[in-house]
Each structure stands twice: as structure tokens, then as C-alpha cells.
Amino acid sequence: MLLAGVRAARAIGEAEPFRSRIVREVFPGADVQSDEELSAVERAIHQTVYHVSGTCRIGADDDELAVVDRRLRVRGVEGLRIADASVFPTVPSVNPVITVLMVGERAADLIRADAAGRAE
Image 1: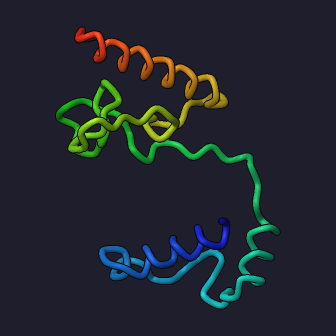
Image 2 (image 1 turned 60 degrees about the vertical axis):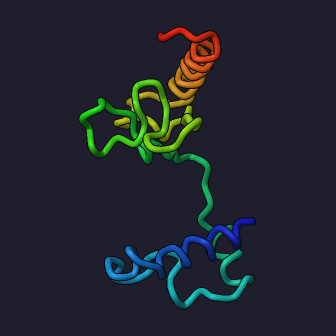
């Protein structure tokens, strides 16, 4: 699975619009190609201390960079909501776990309200 992820990321980087913007592969590096090499490099550096967030930020209707609205709906995609750290407009100063749980609870409330036909 890990190797498939690295290969998928490389394929994305080799396609436009990224291809014309990427100068070089920083990690793991173009010289790392075989499954054995990729696995060794990834296993040597893998850590679980990072909290990825802010990739699909929530924002006001007039925020062109926000892909999620205030009801956690992905703009332009019917029936899809995001309820994880990717909606954070900024990284919280505390461990994000409790904030992610709060976003999940809010999403549940919004989905229940929509199902009942009421706005929250």
C-alpha cells in the first residue's frame, strides 16, 4: 500500500498542471526507484507525529480558496461532506484530535438536521 501511494504521488506530479511547476522530486528522490529502495527509505523516515490539516479548508461563501462551506459540504459535489482536519483553515495550537472530534460531531448534527429538513 505504501509503495502504491508513492507511485501514485509520482504519477500525479508527472502530469499537468504539476509537471510544469515541479523542478525536481525532493523526497524520496528520483534515484530511488525499486520497490526495495522505496520501502527502505519510507520505513527509515516514517513517523506518526505529524497532523496533516488544512488541505480542504472551510470558509465563507466569498472565500475562493475554501472548498468546504460552513455546513462542511464540498462545493460543487452533491452529497459529500468533509469532517476531518483537512477543513481547518489554520492549524490549531493544541493537538488537533479533540478539534477533529468536534468537527465530526458538528457534521453529525448537520447531517441529522438535513435529514429532518431543518437548517442549523
